[in-house]
Length: 307
Image (cartoon, rainbow, N blue to C red; front, side, top):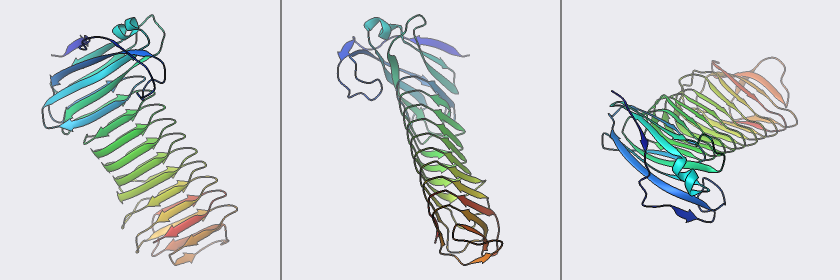
């Protein structure tokens, strides 16, 4: 049986805050109201969070309980009181949602700090104008924000992460990664799975420990630095414009290479068997015994293939 509860305010009172030290809502005076609640949740259960105008942080602890803490912000006391936190829960899933006042416009939002048992699936975590941070969770995980950064560490399972006007930082992801951002860099290290990463006006730095599926990285006006592990047997595509591409390969590799640029050069630490038309700006060839295609393309940027 599932239960639904609109959480009352737990804070002793409302406080007027001034200044800009809180990241979530900018520089106007505002009221705030804290909330806190907890429910039983099995290890390996599911968590969904829907917030707005505030950050969401999810961490794990060694208890079979979900602990939900946070703060509501608004410009007036009435708005703060009318912004509700709804929790729908059962033994194996918890859904948390911030609900806007239905007939009132204004500047308000909520920030969450949530603790979950180890292995809980981050089924869906969304917000706006705030960061999402998660560690030691499980996938398949879906994280989405806007005007904020995304940080994920030590995730077991696949990840779909999306933001705008913010960076994405990933460490130790044991599964396929699909990441989208704009005007923010992507840094992904310790990836063990497929990778599909897209940004604009910023760089992509990716280190794959294991490749299981296609690798695709794409930017505009941002450089790409990509490192592949030994025995990669998947297609690789890296594309950008107005910046360079650096590809790090293990000492022994078997691949087909197609690399092209304009107004810049291509260099390689590997001996290649060339085929077709070869020029300063375009190379078609095979490394080692040949194999999956590595496709590198840019404009106005250098391409380097390094050991």
